[in-house]
Each structure stands twice: as structure tokens, then as C-alpha cells.
Image 1 (cartoon, rainbow, N blue to C red):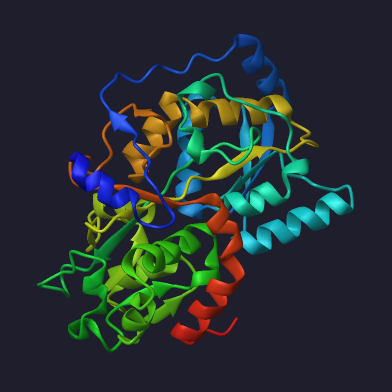
Image 2: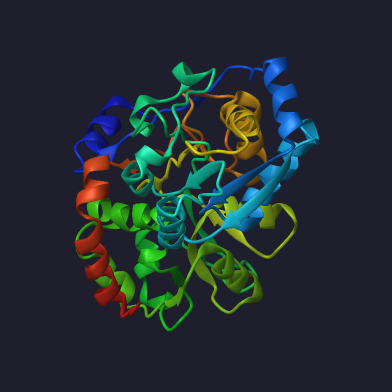
Length: 344
């Protein structure tokens, strides 16, 4: 990206430009043998996550190829439901989670006292603007793309503004509801702060079908219930690799990304397995798997491998300022709900 373009982008309110770049060989993960031995003795861990079930399960599968002696039990819930469960269990002294993996860094920050002190061995390799607490780390950095079914769409959308075209009106477009979690909140913030205050109204005028999360919406695109949808690359890319009728591109106006806020529970019953899980996920090896298998981006300063479909020469990443992420949440989501006619 040239300097004038970067300067123009930097003037956008709320914009934080992340600059991970490829260009180095990823380092193999070499954990302390004592940590591995202790983790294997524990033999298990419990992962509370707001991530997509298919994506998280794939991560578990790859982790277990290297560490088959640790059984990872996944408890998955949407962002708000997960936080409610965590708070209730913690208040009763019955929090079962060893690791809490959340797409909304703000909600993780609000329960910061429930996390143990932790930093990965490669902490200095991470972009500081993605960290909201020394206890919370971006194990995953999913990005939003524009997806479509090529069997239904001959002239696919190529920009975020294309999703407002009357030609795609009448239920051809699907949308994940704004209150679904931190990743979607990031996307709708991007739409308003970068594309303009009138974007929601113009997009809502196409009468999109609303879905509770990315997974059912992605399936709906593949089945042909809708033809087009903004979706997380991590749900689209694996389906495309498997041969499903779905294609995607990044919007030239920006690529909204959501660094996760993940950490080890202070009351973890399996702290060594939890630390090994975190260390591996945040290592070059773990981030390589995330990029390669799911099409995710990374919060590492330098990516260990190039990201599929992402061209650093023309695509630019966007994540909101954390203060805006927190302060604007309730009022803007209420407005989004009214604009799109969604009732919780």
C-alpha cells in the first residue's frame, strides 16, 4: 500500500491498521518437555469458546496430532450466553473452564479477574494493538469477506457497497444478526465508521434474510437459500476447499478483523494442559494451522505464511479502537436492530 493511501485510511475515525506481513519462515513449536509431561499427566482440559464449532474442532484435531494424550472438551455458546454462563459458574465457585476463548475482547476484559496471569513464550512477536490485557491473547484473528454461490450469481459483488445494489434485493442477501457476538459487532462497526452512517439503511433496504450466526448462513448460501452474504473467511474457506459451491473476495474498502481475547481461567483444574494449548495456539505452528486450514489472519507482527485470498499490496485490515468497541456497543446495536427489523 502506498503512503498516500495509508495516510488516507489512517484519517478514518475508529480505524486501527494492523500490519502483519509474510516474509519469514515459521518456527517449529518446541515446548518445555516438563510442561508436556505435566500436561499429559492431567490428560484433559475444558475449552469454553464462542468460536465456530467446526473451526474450533479442526483446531483441536490439529493440536491432538502433536499432543494426543490431552483430551480437549469443547463447550460452545454464543458470546453473550457464554459470558453469562461463566459469570454464573464463577459466582457459585463451579467454573469448569480451563481456557476461555472469546471473540469479544471487551467481554473478556470485563471478566479479567477470572483469568490467570499468562503470556506465551513468543509474546513479543504479537502486535500490541491487538492486546487489551496482559492476560488475554489473540489465539485467532478471523476476518470478514463477501461470499456468494457461483451457481446462482453470474455477476458477484466485489465491494461492500455492492451489497446495497437493488439487483440483489428481495432476499438474495443473508446477514448475521448484529447481536450475535464480537466478530459481527466488529463488522457492523466497520460498516458505519468506514462506509458511512447511511450504509445500514441502504443495505437493509435490500431486505436481507437474517441468521443467528455464520455457520447456518454459510450453509444457506451453499444450499441456495440465499445467494450472497458477508461471512467470516474461517467458515467459507474450508467449505470452498472441500468443493462446496461458494466463492469469496475481500472488499476493497477494508477487511474487518477481530482479534480474540483468550486466556487461562484462574481456577483451572488442568493448568498445564491449558498452558500447552495456549502456547501452541499462539506459536508460529499454531498460527500457521489457523491461516492454512481456516483462512484466518494473524495478530503476529510477521505472519509465518501468506494468508489465502489476502493480497497485502491492496487489501488492508481494519479493527476498531477498543474504546469505541466498548462505548458504542449498546446504542449502535439497538439502532442496528431497528434498522434491520430484528427483535431479540
